[in-house]
Structure formats: structure tokens, C-alpha cells
Length: 193
Ligand SMILES: Cc1cc2nc3c(=O)[nH]c(=O)nc-3n(C[C@H](O)[C@H](O)[C@H](O)COP(=O)(O)O)c2cc1C
Image (cartoon, rainbow, N blue to C red):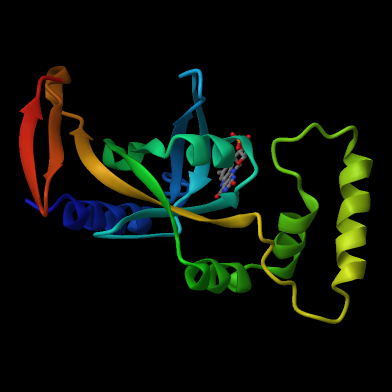
């Protein structure tokens, strides 16, 4: 009756599948909503999870970043075809700690760290040359020194209020089990497929 433990077991299985059949089990769809209530969805990478929630990192000034500041409700979806499994998560995105963001940022390749400064994620870009120029400027600014984490770059932890596991069954009799948080506990009910 612990969906986080169940997620952990499936994630371990997904990581063991060869990459030709399941290229990246950390890839997850993240849905947010605009102030007008319009949904948008994109793929981000899962960088950690535990009973507190599911963590990803991004530019806080991007579309998703701004939407989550205005309305922290978010939804995640994993699809692992090799396991015939879909996992849907709904919840609220909370900031990770500064220390957590620093630790992950410092673990990234220097090129990615420079990219985090150079990219005005989700803004209009006139040409790829403009992006290359910005990268060169950032490289020059931080030459011969570590690249600090930009103030607009951090992580969000989606604290789940529900987690649904879908597993393919024979003759379309798929199994759906939806866990809902009830205080410190989880309740589970089955849904028609
Ligand atoms: C496989 C894959 C992984 C990605 N991982 C991330 C990620 O971890 N963080 C991120 O900000 N964008 C990631 N992106 C890019 C996003 O999908 C998206 O294009 C970008 O964040 C801008 O989204 P937005 O304008 O809705 O904010 C990834 C894209 C792909 C295809």
C-alpha cells in the first residue's frame, strides 16, 4: 500500500531494461496550466524521488517555470513500453532547497552549466548564431573558474496527491490502481480501464 515503494520497484525494473527497448526511463511528461486554464505539456527528466515527491530541474523563467509559480498544480506521466506500464502522478510543485539545487547543478557537465546561463528558455530566439554568441559570452565570463548556478535555475519537487499505475492486461482488461493521499496514508481503489 505504498505507491512510492511501488514506483521504486518499477523504476528499478525499467532501468534494467536494455536501452534499445526503453531509451530513458527518467523521461517524463510534465503538464502545467496557464492562468487562463490552458494546459501545456513537455518532457523533463526525473532527477530524484522519495516519499516527498518527484524532482526535476529547469529554468524558473521558462513557460513551465512561470506557470508553476502562478499555479503550482502539476501532473507527471511516465510511459515505459517495455514494461507495458504507464504511471500518472498529480500533485503540487514545491521548490527544492538551495543546497539541493546547488548540489545537482555542480554535478552537471560544464557545457550544460554554461547552457543554463546562455539560454533564455522559452523566449524568442532570432537565430542559432545568437545562441552561440551568448554561449561564447558566458564561457568568457566564467573562464578559469567554476560556473555558479544561475539564480533563475533550480528544481521543483512534485509532491503527489495521487499516483495511478496502469498495467496492460490481456484482451484490453488493463489493470488501473489509483492511490490517493489521505493525510500521512494512502488509499487505493481500482478503476475501470
Ligand atoms: C528527453 C528530454 C528531456 C528533457 N529534459 C528537460 C529537463 O530536465 N528540464 C527542462 O527544463 N527541459 C527539458 N527538456 C526540454 C523541455 O521538453 C522543453 O522543451 C523546455 O523545458 C521548454 O519548455 P517550456 O517552454 O514549456 O517551459 C527535455 C526535452 C526532452 C525531449
